[in-house]
Amino acid sequence: MPAFAANLSMLFAEAEFIGRFRLAREAGFSGVEYLFPYQWPEQELKRELESNGLTQVLFNLPAGDWSAGERGIACLPDRTDEFRAGVDLAIRYARALDCRQVNCLAGIRPDTLDESLAWQTLVDNVEHAAARLDDEGMTLCLEAINSRVDIPGFFLDTSARVMQLIKAVDAGNVKLQYDLYHMQIMEGDLIRSLECLLPWIGHVQFADNPGRHEPGTGEINFRNVFAALDRLGYGGWVSAEYRPSGDTTASLDWFRERK
Image 1 (cartoon, rainbow, N blue to C red):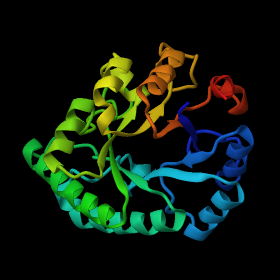
Image 2: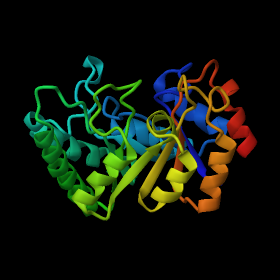
Image 3: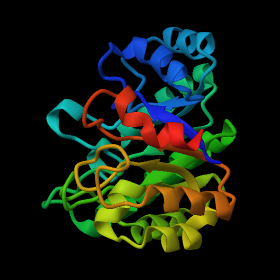
Image 4: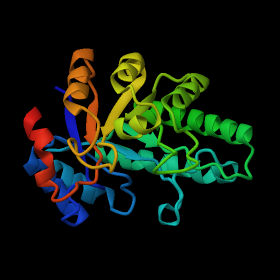
């Protein structure tokens, strides 16, 4: 059975952020992730992980001004210094939290930015981040996010696009972060995609579609998808990154069924 983690940026939002660690443990999760750790001191987060017996599964590299709508800066040539400083900051947090992988958000390419320049910038930045993380024994994940519903203009919006980047960078510690919700919107055919892409997948996330709510609220057959991950021998984490349609605990029937 896959090891399930809770995304604390979305789940247990009934509580203040620090209180969500305990709620995740009480619900039966053994791992947690969230978008960004940087507004909290490393030692405070470490204390919550240790006191609740949780593994820090993943977090994102700094992604620019999130409140202003930025969704990553890795493809922006005028933000290279900021990106690389963010890699150093992420490594500092990853060390403290014993987190073995971080995710890179490519960002939105402005219409005024030449696509080939954005691509080369992304390749160069990912090469830099991969090398720095490799020195720490850490993995860099690359996520495709749908450009139809959630983030129009996102530079990496299909698994094929991420695979093109992985091959361009050619580093052993660069993996695909496969989000079932985003890829259902962009591609569908989830189980066949998992079968084909499994050697490159370092992390899996999920939400149902449409709505980005818990399993059972949309069109994805999660019983079949989770069974496929079992059959394929996927050994990584599978993170619940959905917005509960109501109370978080009430949304966890899918999890109770799998325990």
